[in-house]
Amino acid sequence: MDRLENSLSMEQEFSHKIFADRVKQLSHEDAQDLLVQMHKQMLYKDNIYKELILNQGRDIVDSLFGAGK
Image (tube, rainbow, N blue to C red):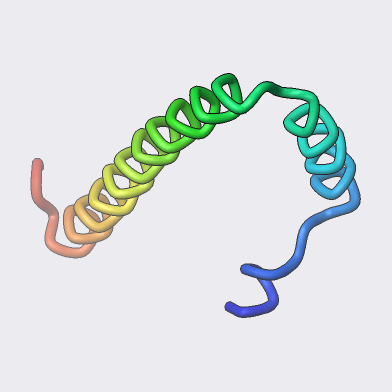
């Protein structure tokens, strides 16, 4: 898992470089606003992942035990 957590594709590295360059040009207040917005988006993403994992678990249980038939 460490390999996945600490590696980016070349496309991701490029995207990150562009993002970093743009952030450096922001005012302090704009950077704070962006950070707050990004945090909220990360929370939304967490909720989506949780829901997908829960649904996947339900689908597996349904397949194994025939729920919903």
